[in-house]
Length: 188
Image (cartoon, rainbow, N blue to C red; front, side, top):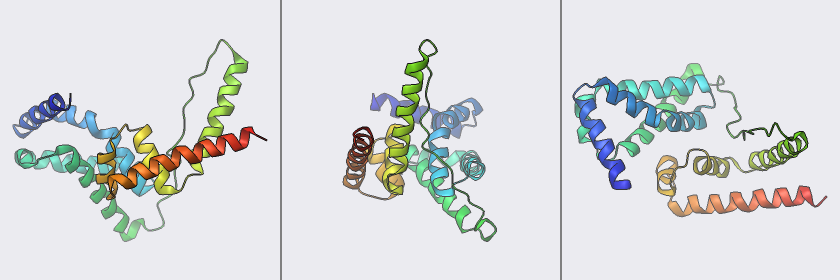
């Protein structure tokens, strides 16, 4: 499976380097959401995150002829978005302009057939959301990258510049703290 994914990425990069816009759009669609989440983590702003991701893809298109020199496009993209976000943070005009967002909202698909179950589900999801929000920032971000973005431990370690063991520790702590939080609320 990983081998097939690498072939698809390599094929896309070859086509993009030849100027094929549909291949570029595929790459964009494949990574936009994940890169957006990384940018929001650093920038705390949807608008700035969108701009940062757009900038990264603009640079990729502008330098498309050199894409084949990149060994790991995924790592390159994550590193690029992190660096772009950090450049935005360093802008003097943005200091103080970055506001906090709730990135960790759990969505509920309501059960329209049973209002009581829908209410209980909503209460439970609110409790889980509160538990997630109570996690320390880094732990919460690692948890989100695993749960929402479905990233592998190695990918998260590269994005956040930490070891894989640190990522595993954050994930274990997140599950433990969420379970303790929920159990504590239900035992009242």
